[in-house]
Length: 220
Image (tube, rainbow, N blue to C red; front, side, top):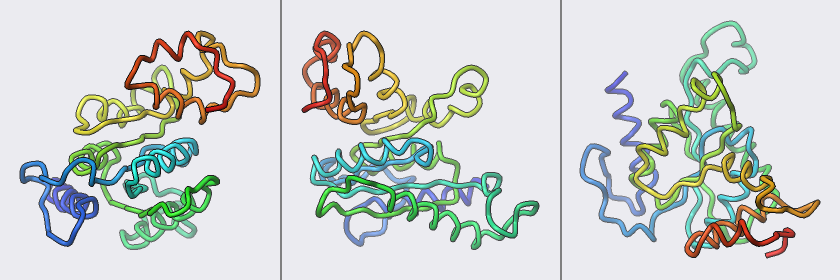
Protein backbone atom coordinates (compact mmCIF):
# COMPACT_ATOMS: atom_id res chain seq x y z
CA UNK A 1 0.00 0.00 0.00
CA UNK A 2 2.85 2.38 0.83
CA UNK A 3 4.41 1.92 -2.62
CA UNK A 4 1.02 2.51 -4.24
CA UNK A 5 0.56 5.70 -2.21
CA UNK A 6 4.00 6.92 -3.26
CA UNK A 7 3.08 6.36 -6.90
CA UNK A 8 -0.15 8.33 -6.45
CA UNK A 9 1.75 11.10 -4.64
CA UNK A 10 3.97 11.36 -7.72
CA UNK A 11 0.83 11.62 -9.87
CA UNK A 12 -0.45 14.42 -7.63
CA UNK A 13 2.88 16.26 -7.86
CA UNK A 14 2.86 16.07 -11.66
CA UNK A 15 -0.80 17.04 -11.96
CA UNK A 16 -0.26 20.24 -9.96
CA UNK A 17 3.17 21.28 -11.31
CA UNK A 18 3.03 23.68 -14.30
CA UNK A 19 4.87 22.61 -17.42
CA UNK A 20 5.82 19.17 -18.71
CA UNK A 21 8.78 18.40 -16.46
CA UNK A 22 8.32 15.18 -14.48
CA UNK A 23 8.56 15.62 -10.72
CA UNK A 24 8.58 13.23 -7.79
CA UNK A 25 6.96 13.80 -4.43
CA UNK A 26 9.86 12.59 -2.32
CA UNK A 27 12.20 15.22 -3.72
CA UNK A 28 12.46 18.68 -2.06
CA UNK A 29 9.60 21.10 -2.56
CA UNK A 30 9.40 22.51 -6.11
CA UNK A 31 10.99 25.83 -7.00
CA UNK A 32 7.85 26.93 -8.87
CA UNK A 33 6.86 30.35 -7.47
CA UNK A 34 3.84 29.98 -5.19
CA UNK A 35 1.95 32.61 -7.21
CA UNK A 36 2.26 30.36 -10.28
CA UNK A 37 0.74 27.33 -8.60
CA UNK A 38 -2.91 26.25 -8.81
CA UNK A 39 -5.60 26.44 -6.15
CA UNK A 40 -7.02 23.10 -5.00
CA UNK A 41 -10.44 22.33 -3.55
CA UNK A 42 -11.12 18.97 -1.91
CA UNK A 43 -12.50 17.21 1.13
CA UNK A 44 -16.23 16.61 1.52
CA UNK A 45 -17.04 18.91 -1.39
CA UNK A 46 -20.16 16.93 -2.33
CA UNK A 47 -21.73 17.99 0.99
CA UNK A 48 -20.40 21.56 1.00
CA UNK A 49 -21.18 23.24 -2.37
CA UNK A 50 -19.96 26.54 -0.93
CA UNK A 51 -16.42 25.12 -0.95
CA UNK A 52 -16.61 24.86 -4.74
CA UNK A 53 -18.18 28.30 -5.08
CA UNK A 54 -15.59 29.92 -2.83
CA UNK A 55 -12.63 28.17 -4.46
CA UNK A 56 -13.81 29.27 -7.92
CA UNK A 57 -14.04 32.87 -6.68
CA UNK A 58 -10.62 32.61 -5.00
CA UNK A 59 -8.96 31.15 -8.10
CA UNK A 60 -10.44 33.88 -10.28
CA UNK A 61 -9.30 36.55 -7.79
CA UNK A 62 -5.73 35.25 -7.96
CA UNK A 63 -5.75 34.51 -11.72
CA UNK A 64 -4.93 30.89 -10.90
CA UNK A 65 -6.24 27.61 -12.33
CA UNK A 66 -8.58 25.64 -10.08
CA UNK A 67 -8.08 21.92 -9.48
CA UNK A 68 -11.07 20.02 -8.10
CA UNK A 69 -9.38 17.12 -6.32
CA UNK A 70 -11.29 13.97 -5.45
CA UNK A 71 -9.51 11.29 -3.46
CA UNK A 72 -11.23 7.94 -3.17
CA UNK A 73 -10.84 4.54 -1.55
CA UNK A 74 -12.63 1.31 -2.36
CA UNK A 75 -14.44 1.29 0.99
CA UNK A 76 -16.16 4.54 -0.05
CA UNK A 77 -17.40 3.17 -3.39
CA UNK A 78 -20.69 1.75 -2.19
CA UNK A 79 -23.04 3.46 -4.66
CA UNK A 80 -21.71 2.14 -7.97
CA UNK A 81 -24.56 0.47 -9.89
CA UNK A 82 -24.04 -3.27 -9.99
CA UNK A 83 -21.52 -3.29 -7.15
CA UNK A 84 -23.72 -2.44 -4.16
CA UNK A 85 -22.74 -5.64 -2.35
CA UNK A 86 -19.33 -6.31 -3.89
CA UNK A 87 -15.99 -4.61 -4.41
CA UNK A 88 -15.73 -2.91 -7.84
CA UNK A 89 -12.61 -3.26 -10.00
CA UNK A 90 -10.18 -0.36 -9.68
CA UNK A 91 -10.84 0.90 -13.22
CA UNK A 92 -14.60 0.92 -12.62
CA UNK A 93 -14.16 2.78 -9.33
CA UNK A 94 -11.83 5.30 -10.96
CA UNK A 95 -14.31 5.96 -13.76
CA UNK A 96 -17.11 6.41 -11.23
CA UNK A 97 -15.00 8.88 -9.21
CA UNK A 98 -14.26 10.88 -12.37
CA UNK A 99 -17.99 11.08 -13.11
CA UNK A 100 -18.65 12.30 -9.56
CA UNK A 101 -16.14 15.14 -9.97
CA UNK A 102 -17.50 16.20 -13.35
CA UNK A 103 -21.01 16.27 -11.86
CA UNK A 104 -19.78 18.48 -9.00
CA UNK A 105 -18.07 20.89 -11.38
CA UNK A 106 -21.21 21.13 -13.49
CA UNK A 107 -23.16 22.21 -10.39
CA UNK A 108 -21.03 25.32 -9.78
CA UNK A 109 -23.60 28.05 -10.30
CA UNK A 110 -21.32 31.10 -10.37
CA UNK A 111 -18.42 29.99 -12.53
CA UNK A 112 -16.22 33.00 -13.37
CA UNK A 113 -15.70 33.56 -17.08
CA UNK A 114 -12.31 32.38 -18.30
CA UNK A 115 -11.49 30.32 -15.20
CA UNK A 116 -9.51 27.17 -15.94
CA UNK A 117 -10.85 24.16 -14.03
CA UNK A 118 -9.23 20.72 -13.99
CA UNK A 119 -10.58 17.57 -12.35
CA UNK A 120 -7.99 15.48 -10.49
CA UNK A 121 -9.06 12.03 -9.27
CA UNK A 122 -6.68 9.87 -7.22
CA UNK A 123 -6.92 6.49 -5.50
CA UNK A 124 -5.58 7.59 -2.11
CA UNK A 125 -6.99 8.66 1.24
CA UNK A 126 -8.28 12.24 1.24
CA UNK A 127 -6.00 13.32 4.08
CA UNK A 128 -2.82 11.97 2.54
CA UNK A 129 -3.78 13.14 -0.93
CA UNK A 130 -4.58 16.73 0.07
CA UNK A 131 -1.53 17.03 2.33
CA UNK A 132 0.57 15.83 -0.61
CA UNK A 133 -1.13 18.38 -2.87
CA UNK A 134 -0.34 21.19 -0.43
CA UNK A 135 3.33 20.98 -1.40
CA UNK A 136 2.52 21.87 -5.00
CA UNK A 137 -0.40 24.33 -4.82
CA UNK A 138 -0.72 27.86 -3.50
CA UNK A 139 -3.95 27.38 -1.55
CA UNK A 140 -6.28 24.56 -0.49
CA UNK A 141 -9.99 24.99 0.16
CA UNK A 142 -11.40 22.04 2.05
CA UNK A 143 -15.07 21.23 2.52
CA UNK A 144 -16.37 19.60 5.68
CA UNK A 145 -19.82 18.68 6.94
CA UNK A 146 -19.08 20.32 10.29
CA UNK A 147 -19.41 17.14 12.35
CA UNK A 148 -19.25 17.10 16.13
CA UNK A 149 -18.62 14.62 18.93
CA UNK A 150 -17.57 11.08 18.02
CA UNK A 151 -18.32 11.64 14.32
CA UNK A 152 -15.89 14.55 14.25
CA UNK A 153 -13.23 12.48 16.01
CA UNK A 154 -13.32 9.69 13.45
CA UNK A 155 -14.59 11.41 10.30
CA UNK A 156 -13.03 14.85 10.65
CA UNK A 157 -9.48 13.59 10.37
CA UNK A 158 -8.94 15.15 6.91
CA UNK A 159 -9.34 18.69 8.25
CA UNK A 160 -7.15 17.90 11.24
CA UNK A 161 -4.40 16.48 9.03
CA UNK A 162 -4.47 19.54 6.82
CA UNK A 163 -4.41 21.95 9.75
CA UNK A 164 -1.40 20.14 11.19
CA UNK A 165 0.53 19.22 8.03
CA UNK A 166 -0.47 21.40 5.07
CA UNK A 167 2.42 23.25 3.42
CA UNK A 168 0.26 26.00 1.94
CA UNK A 169 -2.56 28.38 2.89
CA UNK A 170 -5.78 26.67 3.92
CA UNK A 171 -9.47 27.61 4.05
CA UNK A 172 -11.88 25.33 5.91
CA UNK A 173 -15.31 26.11 4.51
CA UNK A 174 -17.39 24.49 7.23
CA UNK A 175 -15.53 26.53 9.85
CA UNK A 176 -15.96 29.79 7.94
CA UNK A 177 -19.65 29.23 7.30
CA UNK A 178 -20.25 28.22 10.91
CA UNK A 179 -18.54 31.40 12.06
CA UNK A 180 -20.49 33.45 9.53
CA UNK A 181 -23.77 32.83 11.31
CA UNK A 182 -22.41 33.41 14.81
CA UNK A 183 -24.24 36.23 16.64
CA UNK A 184 -21.04 38.18 17.15
CA UNK A 185 -21.08 39.01 13.45
CA UNK A 186 -24.55 40.51 13.82
CA UNK A 187 -25.67 39.19 10.43
CA UNK A 188 -28.74 40.85 9.01
CA UNK A 189 -31.58 38.58 7.96
CA UNK A 190 -30.97 37.24 4.46
CA UNK A 191 -27.23 37.93 4.46
CA UNK A 192 -25.29 35.73 2.05
CA UNK A 193 -22.95 33.36 3.91
CA UNK A 194 -20.76 32.80 0.84
CA UNK A 195 -20.42 36.54 0.28
CA UNK A 196 -19.44 36.93 3.93
CA UNK A 197 -16.80 34.23 3.44
CA UNK A 198 -15.30 36.36 0.67
CA UNK A 199 -15.65 39.46 2.82
CA UNK A 200 -13.76 37.87 5.71
CA UNK A 201 -11.08 36.57 3.34
CA UNK A 202 -10.41 40.05 1.94
CA UNK A 203 -10.16 41.39 5.50
CA UNK A 204 -7.76 38.69 6.66
CA UNK A 205 -4.71 40.82 5.98
CA UNK A 206 -5.98 43.56 8.29
CA UNK A 207 -7.92 42.21 11.24
CA UNK A 208 -10.64 39.61 11.65
CA UNK A 209 -11.78 41.67 14.63
CA UNK A 210 -12.88 44.41 12.25
CA UNK A 211 -15.40 42.03 10.68
CA UNK A 212 -16.66 41.00 14.11
CA UNK A 213 -17.37 44.61 15.04
CA UNK A 214 -19.00 45.57 11.74
CA UNK A 215 -22.56 44.59 10.77
CA UNK A 216 -22.57 42.74 7.48
CA UNK A 217 -25.51 42.84 5.08
CA UNK A 218 -24.23 40.58 2.30
CA UNK A 219 -22.95 43.34 0.01
CA UNK A 220 -19.26 43.66 -0.81
